[in-house]
Length: 160
Image (cartoon, rainbow, N blue to C red; front, side, top):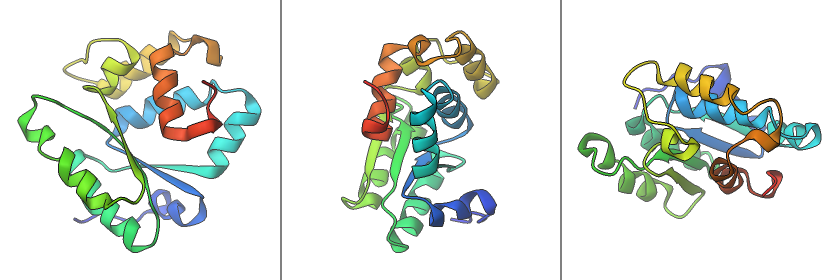
């Protein structure tokens, strides 16, 4: 795996928890969701967690191995992709790469299902951003199913 260690990825060394997300869509939705938390909780999460984009499901495995070699146990967030042969094949190798360190949080089947709309064929991150705008500006507008998933990722830092 060739992964450029830019200033964004280098932040993993200066945080308590690393969340690896599959791609742009997950990053956009999670960051937009966090903005809707009460201020105290938002500040706690952004100070204790760093979200790193793997830039594809296959890249997650190499990134996990790199972080574990650095004694960092990541939280990995990716789509389950059941029935999508080219993507589903990576699910077990991701779990194997963790080797019991960290945890995996899967979207069933994808993040669009989790937040309640059909996955588009194009412009997925932009469409996801548009969906988050429908939630309003506070935590109350976030869909209940997605709140549960956020709690699974960020633990007690997220209200149930």
